[in-house]
Length: 390
Image 1 (tube, rainbow, N blue to C red):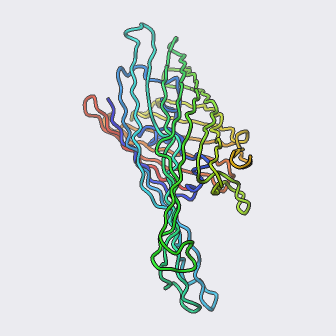
Image 2: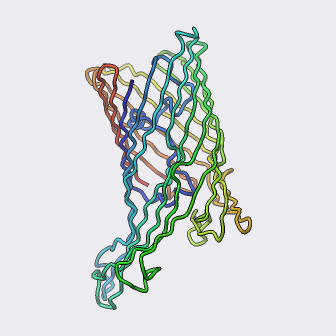
């Protein structure tokens, strides 16, 4: 049995895109995260649970997000006095992914394993608070009192529950297949104004909050993969994940293309509307290798290609049919990691991730990861920390 802790700290400026563009749909255990998200049973169906008997993973995934926006305060001499932070998205969210696997080889007399897992693949959670300051007239800088806040909150996740089967007919060859069910959980939209003192800069005269319903219909997709062991210490894997459309119904905000920024955005619909967002086709190539060092060392890597360019339209069905074309680009990501075993007892792990963005080079993401672990008999405790910049 393995119990793992997944601690993820990120700082970036892209969370406001999350309702339209899924940014967080990579399933990782703590060990895999610490090694840069390389090839493991989450990303590759053919790895499965072979050789592990009965195994339980429970992950505590804690994500801390901090985003700020500011404007320069300029005095009468055109000098920048300070940067006033006027908007912030700061949140601490958690989820509890799990996986239950069993190796059936001893009963079926063939190398085969089954596993059942659940993990979030799309995180909607976003908490935006814009500080609104009352105006005290010219000549008074950086002392304007806070009149209130404009607030926009999103809640919920898209959860993935999947059944995985892996089989190894030959010692150098393995296959895997996964069927996946995607469901919405606690989805919501909320917008409003918190008034501390009445001011014309605020969108309302008194505190008001409006909540809108958001529901997702169930989606299904599949994954398949193959593992080749050309030599004992090295494994090479290829995988493919099918595309899927997730349909939403809401009386609130729907996706649009912002004409000013040419980026995905949201607008309040004038009636109950439905729309679908696609998770695109994905291909992956990965490896794991046991290096011939005096210190036990495992290296892993993964390369993924995602064809966003063919899944960049959202059709909103409300009072009329409206189409938002986001002009996405194909993306690729690379994941590299190493695990060193100190005195063959304690692992030290570090990794690197890079992901391009469907929106172009300005939105690429990089991540540095660290981690360790400790075994206590049949129990294993793993810790991973990821620092993200975008």
